[in-house]
Image (cartoon, rainbow, N blue to C red):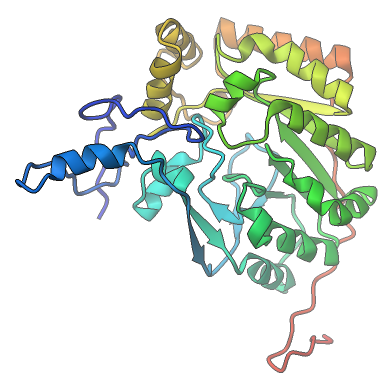
Length: 374
């Protein structure tokens, strides 16, 4: 049974204190929540204990899951891929603006704190991908890794699920694209670079700001801006087509940096770029506004006024076409600035073309462990 609830713009009770390394400490209720709780003095010091626990830095919990399928279809005309593979659900990077946060509500988990502390690891992702690609009905389509998570978030260093997925794609010459904020992809250059040489890979580094202080509170566990630029350079020198995503553009926060970010990316070897304005679907809206008032109280009202100006007076507009770029004079000015900068810097190719013709179906192992011949 579905339980839609009004999403509160501020937490009940005292606002949670910020914690280093977390985008939010607010375990916001999600729109499907059917039960609510409140602190009650039972005479055993419960309230004092709850206050003490609020100051304990929340640890990351990895929940291993064996999924039934790994390929997701895309029906949005706003993005240029047909299928996606997400090796994880949730993301420890903790980007406060992440549009994927509401997906945790489908697991009955909070899109706030749980999204960045309770990470679902799809440990059989490579196995399920191989099965899907081996299906007689499968035809190669544009595939993206990590559309709703960062495939190279910290736990990937230990689990290597993303690497196992790329190994399957490499073995059957299936092209893929990826957007990441991590330098972790450098580890897998032995797979990625040979595929790139054959027109099978496109990588985009998401660089939201060059200011390390802003990045630390906006994207607390993602790689530092200078480290992402070094990854752009490393990929480019290895022959991997690499672009930059200047996303999301947040008025009066990182928006003044658009041109500087594009210049730095071009200097590092990027050859393409794209940009998306801030999106605030569902629970992302109160989480972001809480963060905004917490860190930028002097300009919070001004930021949201500009956001609403680009969203027809609302905090968010979910319509295809409008949701990525916004509408109105200010959205048009942003687009003009971006277009002029990428043209001047030679970053005016928004997509890197990939070759679907090299795909060959993978062989599935038989029950006795031998590979099938036909």
